[in-house]
Image (cartoon, rainbow, N blue to C red; front, side, top):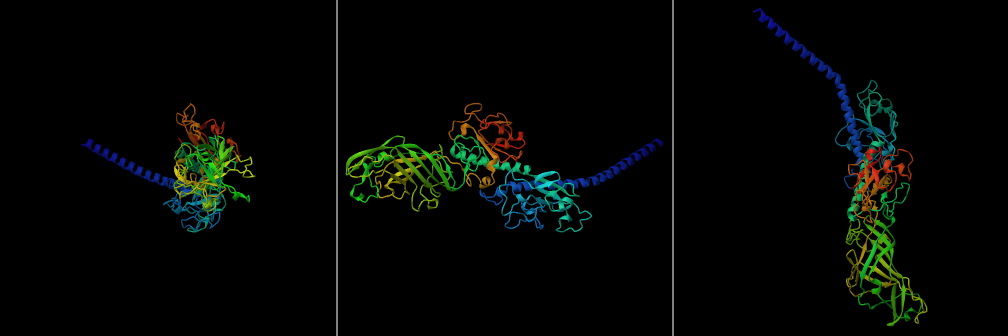
Length: 599
């Protein structure tokens, strides 16, 4: 029996050991949890600070869209809400000024989503903003990668925003709740200047550098430029000619055969060079009979002579010519006025008939001067490049003059036909030499019996006059067409390009390149390692030599040499050497450049 009692005693001792160990473990866990609780609270605060940081960056990135509309004239990305000075949750800009009420206040919870950003004690975060980044009435411009942050933290500078968790009150912070900064923040963080510290009391902070912010915003800019270029290519089949890269330039007109450079664009009412061609085959009566023109003259005895007759077939039949020195200007987002001159490639001969008797003929060169206004609101369109019949910027337009663009009220866009030959051997009926300068007006289509000019398939009556008088109308209906084609245009601000992009000079910090196969003269689809070659992007997924087009952002100024016309002051490695070699390097390999491939 005694051995059995020993076994029972041993079991009891073992159970006691288990109890003691469990109790010790429990006490140890309690102590560890207690010791770990400050760390957990610290992590909660750090997580909240980083969440607030990302919310501010998201606000700045999406700033043009915050109105809830696709307004291309909205201010660009980069702006942040002013600090909340009176702790009501809303930003406090100074009304109708270019500054916030204060560079330091609480974080503006009403502009950053549903979260109320607080630390582990429940105190709302404080927030300082560089004065030039505020969403105020008169915003700082240009806002781009070259806009410096004006705050500093310890040894770090070029900071856009600082977010501070105040922590529990210290022995000297006895006034909470209050509006006094020093009841919440400590030392350098409470003195109201642009300098802050991560070592001040129990404050905890994070900050946003200019480079952090602009790395994100540049991605949006690259995306918007890429979208505009893709839309252009979809409409025309090619990319537009570019302007050579020179951020010091003041005009950004396209230059033929430029496939690498800056975005070429036009503002409303800015005249820009372009290209278009015209061809027609219009029979004025179609039988070769002369048509009578009544010239105007200042000669007192003009009425004693008979009108001149001209064979209109020779004037309006079978021309195909490119316009010399064409220029256009956008008179509105969806209205354009273009002018230029075409020269008939063949000499012309006009038969001059007086009183029914052939007198002489005139040989010379014929020019066709175009001055065409295309306001918005109608249905015809001008074809763009080879995508014909197409539309002008994918908009419906008509071909009648608009008084708001400089034409007198009621006039039409016109094509003036000028013959350089004149009757320079004195005729028996006149003692002066008479030039022949008929004008072809593109009328508004209200007289269907007249002959037609057709622009991209839209029929217009034809009126032939002498010296501006519209009394002599061709009344014989005729078949034929007039085509305006290969119209080249740059991307337009407020249309393909959001206006904030140029207002903030982003176009000076973006490089565009595309292959010869994607150019307006269209050498055919690019071929990797072939002719025409595609673009090579070093560091991209293989194959690296099959890219059609790309856009590159320059990033912040690392060398301090901007503005400059030198590639190396903006881009790095292959992106800056040998312009035109169709070889670039992926942005992640560089410290600053970012690259977006279009296709």
